[in-house]
Image (cartoon, rainbow, N blue to C red; front, side):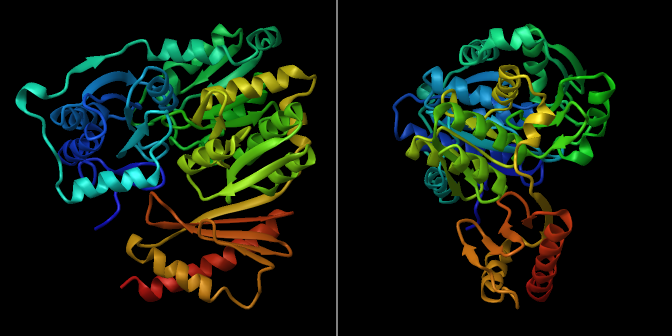
Length: 461
């Protein structure tokens, strides 16, 4: 029995792995799970901007309705809007039709718990068991669910959001911002919200586009050439790019310098730790050492977890953490909600800049600098565990100072660290290497690329 749920939900190519028949069945499995725990479950459903969203949303909703769950459609909205709506409007669960940053031919299904967080693995496993064992329980004809719509999710979220940010401070600053929504779900809220906050907003790809024709939906440096060029050109204070479902934000400083997600993660962690005189920050093993440096400097503590925002969020909840996030631009603000939230991230970065007299580049300059090399190696899903085991048994001639097995294999050497871990969403191994300069990081990374490729070649048949 294979696993359906990866690091962030179920994903696949539309009408190959993810088709209407599958969506009806998994919708029925999700509905069966929640129906067993509540006599009349209320489930919210929302989507990002992908072309297949209406098709797949309708199928999942049909499956949910067939088991007796009531379904409320909240439309095309960012993922954090769905999560906040579920948490605050009394829904027992939520479903988001999204493949996040994946290419447009992909789509997926995320299930949200009643507290607004993504489901923990143990509940995903129970839903999978229902699906694979065909233990779906359909409702009698007179007890099928009711379908309705809620059109105010964005306004409700927006009003709640601005209540936890120093709006007057931001308005006085009168930021000039270049906003790149990439054609994703952020288009429905980010441009107007920033304008309402007194920002002079220049928009790139801020119309919904399910084909992502303007740029790739993942806000990597190579995909943001127009943003990087435009920010210094119009003398903006900063630029920001969102991913497809708008739960992640990547920033560009006023000089047009692309800022890796680690940098903004460390900047916000530093700010919050400093003003709170301590506190816990939670982040995965993939994050840069600069996060630990700034947090410990101001009396805080860092807890590292396995990769995945649901894992980070739940460890934050367990430890009453002050802040958390991932190196990919996904920041989590527990005072608002326990999930990645790009819109909250933009407002918090503006608040931090407006609090002092320094530009974004000057604030980032104060963060300790490490160079990170990231790459990936193809590996069939069915041999990932074997490849990782082989890596552990044959690390090589160079002995690590320390090994961390929180997620994959993280090895610390004198010149830096390397992490190799199987992806939870794609048939690849991801490799992260960090050192005090680019060349050292690349050398560390390339050494392990060769090792993984050799093991895969010898065993993929």
